[in-house]
Image (cartoon, rainbow, N blue to C red; front, side):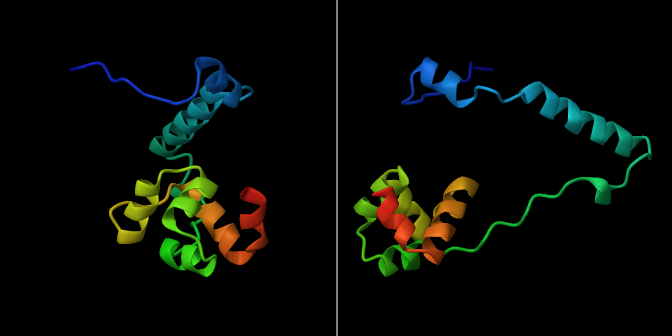
Length: 116
């Protein structure tokens, strides 16, 4: 199996700063303990925290309502123009974070001005 390599435009220092204070180990252990409790019959699936469902957004409609080009919309969100194009034609979906941001912009257009 070949080695997996990740590419980022961020420096190692910037990546480290972004994850400062995040305790990955505790989160992984909590999940494993929940799974173990479930396997032993000490917890039901309903006791686990469920992720909130993400809001529905139509990227093309939101962008058009802002009278923005794909390029301008992409720059505002910090993604490539090709990413916005892929979202709009259904080749891919926005990440959960992008989806939430687009939803917030959809609900309050003044946020778009703040992000420019």
